[in-house]
Image (cartoon, rainbow, N blue to C red; front, side, top):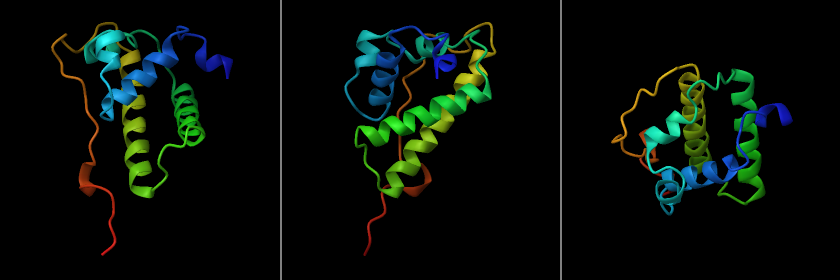
Length: 124
């Protein structure tokens, strides 16, 4: 596991927790305490040269943590959560190959949504 975290700051876990919580509608701790913008978060990945192997390991750890902290386990929520994590980590790999930040500082923070499903399944 150490190889996954070799290039991360000791504060990375807190920043990720703040970012994911904010994206999913929680307090704006990433915005107010950890950099303030989506462009800043993207900028933290520039030049890190993340690999697919590291991305997959990171996803595995995030999902294990979700289970450990008791995040909702219903299929619709977990599908949306995994979809967001997959999307975000794949963007992190892409951005990590760049030498300049593609976003301007006014780029809004992304927010999570239900996507195509329109919300959790509710039986009739």
